[in-house]
Length: 94
Image 1: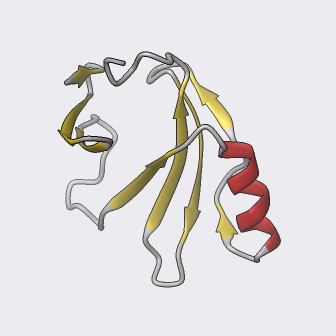
Image 2: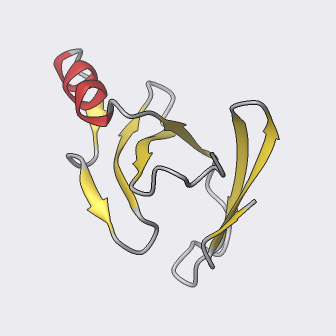
């Protein structure tokens, strides 16, 4: 398990993880699910999705709080997709 304070990430099996986050600024009523894809190729996915016309909420940025490099996009149904890389190569206990 990776405990980031506001987020806890659990290994489900192999390379599959499930994370739960809470933050004071979250909406009172949940408005959906955020899917996160973890990859070393954040910039390549950003370019590929942007070129395909996917709605990108922001270009890739470093988030020091969680130690990640990431961006957010929306699928055609409005689901938020986060593509990220952990800055700590040993984040999953490797």
